[in-house]
Length: 340
Image (cartoon, rainbow, N blue to C red; front, top):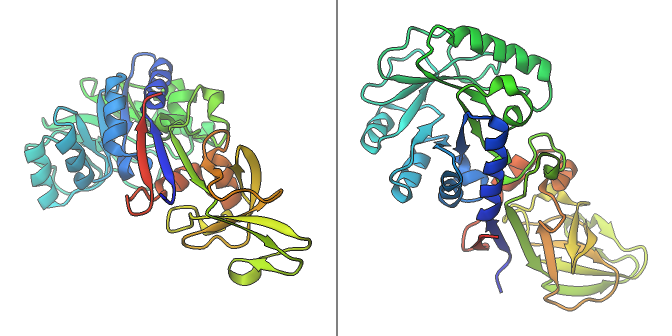
């Protein structure tokens, strides 16, 4: 049996792209597919996004972009992270575009996007130089579009002022949160990641913004056993039965991306919510059952009303980190593509 199955719905990608394009009101949608498309598959998601009207794909590294280039030879690809000299040569040969955020000389023969630090305090130039000929865009990144609109608007203002002398260049600032909620940030293009995957940048129900989750994750009960009073399950005896208790063992653990700090979260067992109990181990976790259930009973980890954000709240993190951590290796999971 497969330890688990990860399902990627490309129809949901296209619907989310349509939502973002409608919100952008004419600005271009650039789909962010870094980290293998936030764990969803960069090539599959990127192809669906382009088919839905996105005009470029963004990665974090040259290596990521080269992998996408091999499958999508006509796509416009923009690398958002730094590149060394060898990677610049690869980018030139592959027709990539590069973001430049430091003081080193601009790479020659490669379209460049100058990145201005307007308040993120991370990658970015303190001031924009007069752009030479190979510069095609100017960009920045918002630190609080999902949490502090006031600070985000100050960043938007600084970006607008700094880029005003260069009207011929493509200006791009908005992320998913800004694309959905901050019209002033949309400029010429928006780099959207998390919303494309149907996850809320605000940690709320994605449906509030018309988004549909793309990833579902399912497994099954691999063993069912009755714990007598005083018996425990898992490392450290974190769950000790106070009454005779049926538990099911699911063959998924932190080695698969179901994190160790998800004890106490809820999954669905045969469509009903059940608590994860005991310590999540590398290859398995336990769920409390209402009664004896057969081995093979379906378990939903994400999807069908179990949002990634609910797990994120238990783990004290964000949905981005959870889905990026899902192990899609064929040695750990079966990955299927649907178009619903």
